[in-house]
Image 1 (cartoon, rainbow, N blue to C red):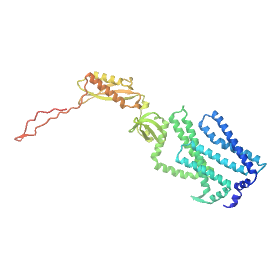
Image 2: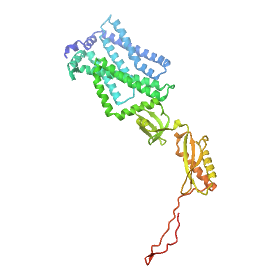
Image 3: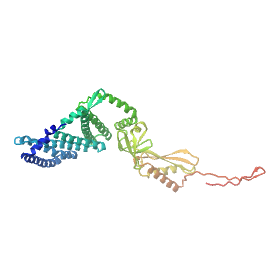
Image 4: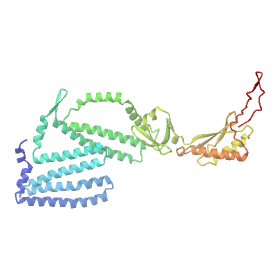
Length: 435
């Protein structure tokens, strides 16, 4: 790079303009254009807020109206002013306004994406690249820098790729990637607000669209710089084999997630039990499902379990059948005990009258007759042990009031005298009974 490039640049032309009396006129034109653009942007934003209800559209207009209006006004004023004076200052102003407009658009697009450290880093790289490119263009070093970067080449197989191609490819991939993320987020947001569609179907379509937009964005970014996309076929095949071998469980969870979302056997809001986990479905992502238990703890269950294990969906059952087991003494009145058990169940809130509670003899146990009370509830997601406890407590109270005894295990202990006479054992002592 030589100083001749700088002498022929916009900076030198600008410096010469500043020495002329017309520089004040150019500054006045720029100030007038900026003031008029600011006034027009405020007026236009007020009208836009009255016409456009979307907050996202209002925010976009608030960011872009002023720089776009200023750019249009300065661009229109430049050929008119060129009839009377030099316009290098206006030329620099147009360049800076173009860069400012691009940065405002990029920052707005990134702000609509979920903020992560990677997205924030991409935003900073994009903004820095725009300012660096603007500075090189204004100073005239743009061509020299490109020539230097093109002279630095790296071997890639049988071909050599220069540094300028790699940098420009990275820049355009970042641009198209951010645009794809923004468009994917907008589409996913629109889908999630479609009340006519099933929530699970909306979720899976939103994620598919976002993934598709990312792939398209990367391919477009690579194609803009002239890279041969067919050269990626070998790399794609190797990557596919690596994913198949090293990420089998992760891939299985992702595939299972799409199966769960598409089949809709488990939906958001259902009360389910899988393996040792139970709770209400809060989120169904492509890799895992969040179950919030009755204790308030979220259980993150891999989607693979939902497709490979038996899943109990209490919300689809309509009514869940529960049971309570109790024993009565053999001498107790079975019919009276069955009636009291049914009354205890029907008197408990949340127990359905239809199908009616039913009492059956489970078995003839060693200590008494074992009865099983079956009953139904319609809201298992609100807890099951609470209903069982209330019915058991009510039954015990009714049994006690009606003279029906609940047996308990008893043991008889006999104490033997260890004394012996002439080798014969002494007669046993009187047995001692205990409970």
